Image (cartoon, rainbow, N blue to C red):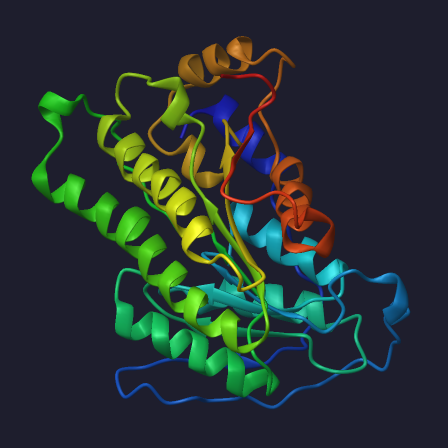
Length: 301
């Protein structure tokens, strides 16, 4: 990675400073493992001031990047958080520790699951409900992948195409389908699927990726109508260029600087620019927003 990109990335490094955590792992046998918890005896903000107090939120792909920031923000609004990761447990455990450090009781767990596998998605929801002895109230699907070589459609391999559609589209479908059924049992809730402003930008090199996200934006419009009468809303949030590891992957300093110059605000977006928008959609205040895609891109498109 080039020097300029390293500087950008360094600005957004986040470190947890607590050893408090619960770790829930879905393995091959789909068992639930809960590690011992060392809880700091520190009272949280009074519950009456928190719009998501004690609601349970699953945030997929939340061990890093935008998903991580969303998990932290929802926790600050009072939600109990299920931190989902695909393979690397360390950053997920670190995030769980950070959330639990300021609570008198565990407020977060980490759960391993590959969202492209519907069986693992089902187990993710099962584990979340068992961990908090509560129905799920909010789903945020932030898990996603991109081909970091940014190939043209003519040069996109079938394997790359299939991988992006497996995670970005099938994964969103599997999570939204599970949430649609589970949230009904809890009397309503919020389904929030992250897509991308590349759907509207139509930039070369993003053909398969944009298509995988466009499918999700279409699906959420239909889903919102199908959920009529359930008190469940379904929306998309479509970030623009956000300074994360995923953004910097495969990009040169020249490319990064060009994108910055194209942004009307003269900077890359930060994860903290996206999280409050998701937070709003997760609360009761967003009830009249349904079947929409909110593009959070600083005017990039």
